[in-house]
Length: 217
Image (tube, rainbow, N blue to C red; front, side):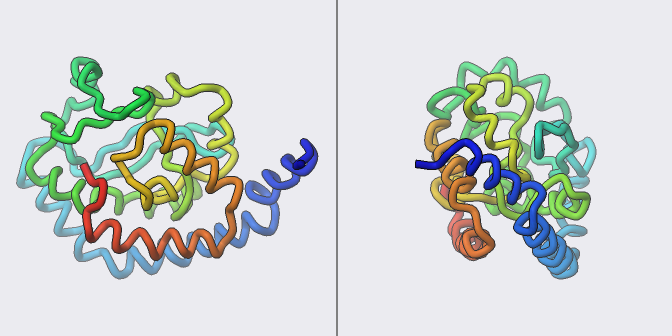
């Protein structure tokens, strides 16, 4: 049986110890390499968004990070400009079982280019800058909007004891097809079993999942 002191020690290693710094070093290396490789796609997507619909190229939203810290997540805009205000009218159509996380497969707020970007997760590329800024990791529980956090049970706050990630166990085991319960199950399992080797396996598994568009919305 794991004691309370063992749990505290384990969390400490993940947020402040040598394991944490090893993870951060690998994050900086991977984020830097990906940005150097993906910059042509980055520029092309930005132009496509600007030509497709009026509004900003980027979408920024407050999310909850390590130890409950608020930060602004960066994404390519995939919806109409006032999408957050329109969400209240769509809450009744939420397709995620459990209702904590909000997802609609054929969201009417989605732009034409936005559907393509979501299908291949290209809208997530700007989060590599969040990784370099120290707000996120390459691998970890997805940072949720404030709307979702307000609906979460307090027991799920353990998600905020590690850096949120661009991809994670939930994303390679169902993505948007997961129920709220399944989504948080994978997050807790990741925290319990975390290692650099697990991060590498998730990273490698993310590539075929994205290409195959499994669970994409």
